[in-house]
Length: 251
Image (cartoon, rainbow, N blue to C red):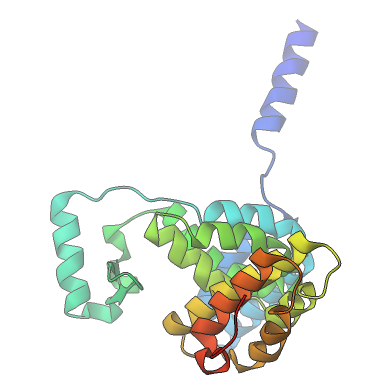
């Protein structure tokens, strides 16, 4: 009987073990909520936001597995009447609602805060907070998630792809870290780096604030790489970022 009770206690404890890091008594997802509402602007909220920034920065790379997992949330299909109401509200920009069009022309309807009851979806909110703020608040160590984000950016699910792309451009000091990969002795690392820059070339069309001019010199140097696939990826990147430097160049 004692053994059964002990086993039940252990299983119960395991069932409630957090699958996300914690800091100062709060989980990662809880700190993301604190950060979101800390953006409202009053002094007390601003202090809460600063605490959230400190907490998630302290978690560092340990937060990445959860963040990568959360942004892959695919959502649930809304009842037809809610879906129609959402589309109308977003098209009319009711209460901050808006329509975001992806690079392939697919509209994504984003309700304003007062209309979020249409979703009533905590997992979606967690996914939103993760891609908007999570990777940014982790800081430069979030660059370790780049392979996962690159893979997700090519996902056929356009919502997940868009989240991954947005998350990439929020990572602080990411581009210098990628550029350093181009001179690595291992060809697979060099390819990963130039593939990432190629992705940023695509992202520049979706996020005009990205300054890609600093990427041109290292990409030109990569055109001399001994590996064909690295040279080919560099050429593709330059076609998007600075096609004027490519005339008369061959692989």
